[in-house]
Image (cartoon, rainbow, N blue to C red; front, side):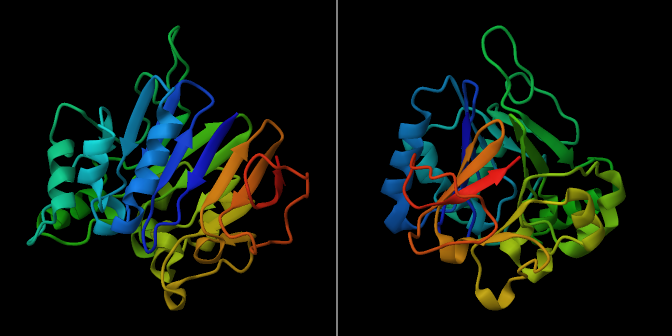
Length: 291
């Protein structure tokens, strides 16, 4: 069994995966100062028995890298994953400087479509793979190369976000960072989309990151997670089952072979599309998604 947790961190993204192999993964890092100690202690606790830990940065915007230096100091990042880039900022923050230090270090591994690495997506006799596969970017794609040039000039790095699939047992989860609708439309024919169970809506669920309808038809997600952003900027994916993190708080997906049990931080939050299996592994169970 494995667990995917989407942390409620305010207007930003942070996730971790406790894999069903000897792997632990953190995706992005947005931590308010008031939550630093609590969240980092949780990361330490949940990863302490895992042989391999990694950090994946979708892109270096502050709402995805805030407190990266503190995290790295308290939970040393040995394996750092990002797309290869030369992003620059006119007034770099401490977090951005830490991102660049890790990005340009020997600890980094650059993500691209179809990339393969031991224990990321290949197992051996020592441990199984983490089940993480990269669907995008294609590094020589002209539109992606344009974005790489723009981020060198300090333009928003949203569109250098990779698209990452996590597979565990029969479940599939998809992350798209903050990739924007207009860019996704340009490159969609180069991405091998397939059906997923849980889609984390890009750009925190903002209208600017709305997944085009033809892609959604292929993905056919059983649940779309709408991230944390001001409600006036959100698209609520009205044709799909959704969990809204603004209201739900932390979201835990406890993965089994035939179902995903879902728990949230807000005990008053509920949805009507899940099956009630009377689970109590964590607090505030809201139902199970059948696979």
